[in-house]
Length: 396
Length: 179
Image (cartoon, each protein chain N blue to C red):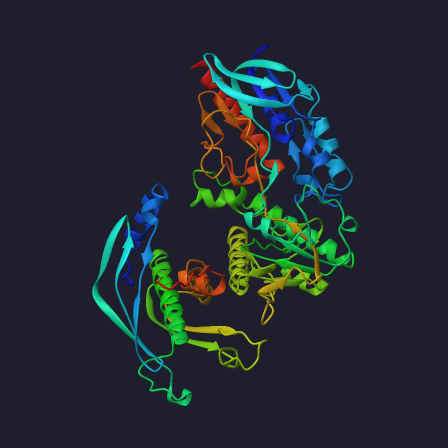
């Protein structure tokens, strides 16, 4: 099979790419290893909801039309939404791409359904294919069950007893809260994190990010792009604030960043107070930015993060206190099938605003072309611009 | 505006070392000699970095001993107090560098450092008590042309980038051998 453009992945990014390829009359096919919105269907925990309110969620050809614009979509709603935008998209489901390599005319793909030749390829296979579990996990005693967010569905599937949740980004705080509420005492290990109130001055904090223009900041205007692309997701969850103070009130015990496992004990950094201070300072700076943009007097300022006077820095994993560990330590993309030398030593795709070069493109990665890129609502502008570039490259 | 920190050199070094991780591998060295009782003298002069041997402008000499209430001669500060020296000077250097980078003029930076220490640990009087500090508290007094929030941010960022803060708050593998 020969085609001008292959899009790998039928999630929000691949579907958006197809929309603009069709508009440009570029013949293409969208290859999907599973079904449309596969990760949203099969790789998410039960209670997960989008961090963005419904009114913000839009894709080319689909915007929110339901009765609750201020609500937060659960996974079934996200799948419905993506399916609506998949109408007229030439998706071939159940096709796993196992290799992409350079060829004379562009790229040769090996798939579970046979070879495909393409002049150009758009990688839209997602940013969160693999759980990033630190190497020190290998030293966890075998009596302690270990799960990643891919394995985790609901607290009742964890063993009874204490749970160590490692990581305090959106995933970590959400899982810590529901596990603690299930009666399993949670110890939450927090490194650097991004604190945000759900609501500021009566508006969703993401309303402020959207309207103030912060989310429109372009990737080539960001001070430290590497850092921006690695920024942990904000401590948000559906309809209410879920910062470390909320978790402390629920009874979650805070400890510092997990730094080693030695002789069956987890050792935590003594620097918890500082990561909390950094997050508070950054949150306040963000709120200052909102005030400046709105031209109003400073609004509500939130209580500083309460850190225990003396947080534990050692937790014996053999005592029975901790029965399971949840690794909420982030995700990374999987490029094991990409036989083109465009991935750096840290496993990140090297690209300039989604343009890798030589007919290879990417969509759906954090801060791809602007801060909004990290979210579903950021894909439309990114896909339009990347496909525009692809069209020019084909013509050139 | 200057605090006397050559931030441009640090930023340049960061860019260069991003692509040359081997040059970023440093080895800091100290050599010590027992004197008498619990008194020892440690000298520091050479280190390795940027791919070659380096030498400080001067050799530095540090006396360590225990105070008279430990029935010692007090020829110098106790070894654990050297950790306070390291922490205070490292955080202070960080504050000056970050302030320079952010265009904040420092008028004065003073720190008091307290390390809480239950000496029953080192005496073997109670097996449940650790040998080292139980906690350390650093209090900075900073006079600078900046808002209180900006000063808080300087102090927070200096901890984030501090070698000694990291060494004290996280475990480190230590190998001690007999040559």
